[in-house]
Length: 365
Ligand SMILES: Cc1ncc(COP(=O)(O)O)c(C=O)c1O
Picture 1 (cartoon, rainbow, N blue to C red):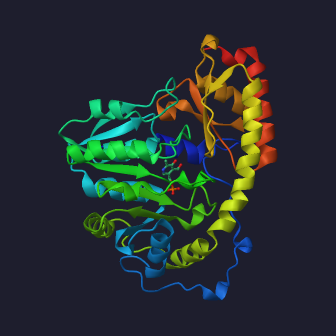
Picture 2: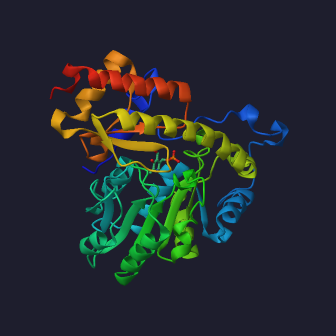
Picture 3: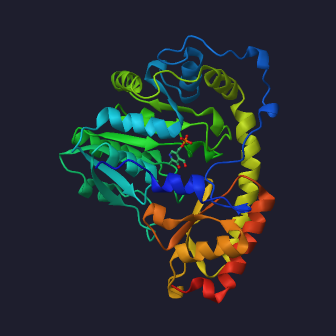
């Protein structure tokens, strides 16, 4: 039986809800009423067979690429799926970072890939180490997969390192898939998309995590024209055509991206200040702090001998607070905290984590 589900996605949809929900990864929802939009501009049907040209142009302009290289998709989820499905044959080797965002692994398994891993270690600050990647590829590696910013840790991989990964990929005829859904959460000196690093780069992203308009499902792939065309043809087997009113709203969102981004930025930055202060004083947790990003990956201190699952169970049942268990990233001693939704809720959630950590029975294994 092929792998046909995502445990993480199922958990996120059914188990993450709590009054103090820190199990998020994206910023607060941006309300339609705050978007300068004339609803009379909306239409239900229109010309969008292989993409809605104004949306493709808006994406292309924003990232400095040719519209031919832009493939629309339903969120980064479908972008990752399409990108992998277009280039992987069953049995192909795919090298994926560890820890990884679960659904990326799930898609690779679903496609019958021979999944190999390269390690990003906490001791090294979760960085992508090109030597580790070089040692892990083989002549059969077809694709190397990285998230940037990294989910769950939010660590930024600079383009200089990605260029080295690109060189490794080119030397064996492989491609590099970089999921950049969190990259625009680098609010100062935002790096250029890695798509520009060479034809072996395929980039996925969307407006869901950093811009607060997840409901639009406005996602895309950047790929060289021949691959982009294959992906569009493959999408004929999935969603065929996109939701036209969603594409119209996507164009409007692109016209106001800074408004969306800055609104979220204020919340993310307020939450980060609270988080840094909390982590400075909380001795029972350790973390690699990052300057940017909407998530933080914390570890329960080893001498408590605890699994995060037990702690999070207690946190939810006794303190009505949730965070994402590290087991979804194959790191059972960790958990992920999300910023950028509501600073009052976030502050109280952190307070409740502290109280739960102080509660001795919570940390029994
Ligand atoms: C790394 C990564 N890629 C993709 C997604 C899915 O994004 P979207 O909502 O655009 O489908 C997520 C969501 O958490 C993510 O963390």
